[in-house]
Length: 258
Image 1 (cartoon, rainbow, N blue to C red):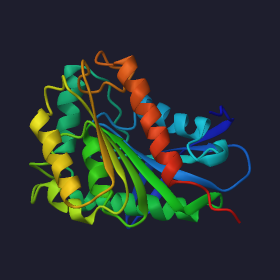
Image 2 (cartoon, one colour):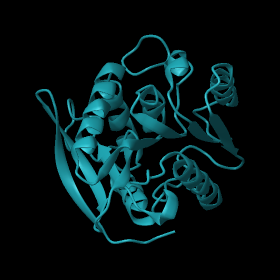
Image 3 (cartoon, helix red, strand yellow):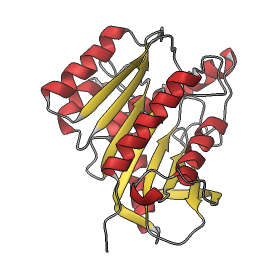
């Protein structure tokens, strides 16, 4: 594990007439690096999501302890630019309201814009892009896993995958055959919003479609167990999940020798 010096900045990414605000964490050292797109919960690109982005950039997740770019776009740019919430009941209600105004097609369009932006950065290895998402973002990265440029995916407690999709329509799980790369999914067995049968449905669909995958279920962990800013934080489950994420990204986003 490394602890390299990083730079962080707010950037704007064009998507047609829309300018998407995003948080970029990058290694200060010279080199060519893989990249990861970090997808927010319903609370916007808040301190937790920024810290996850920084964690990737600092610690490295590919062979030879190299570090990577981490990019966190705002998903509510159309309806609530600049929104950043905490974890109060009022924040939850507000975030859910913004989430309900998103659509799968808009989200995928924004992620495609993120991919194009990252590929144009001189130090990003364009064929080594992964994604990680939490809560609402855990659902979103399941969608994004269908994009050919996303090589690997980590989905944390993504709710509603078997029975819904942003904006309405066929449930996101029906897109499973289009997933391009390996995917790991992480759930807490005490998560009141994601029944065990939903995680079993996801696992069965991934298996049926021969998608490389692993499902991790943590006893005693509830929704949001990875976030140390939430009362539901579970340090043991979070540490094990991060170890498995590191393993996943190290295996699938290795730098090519040139």
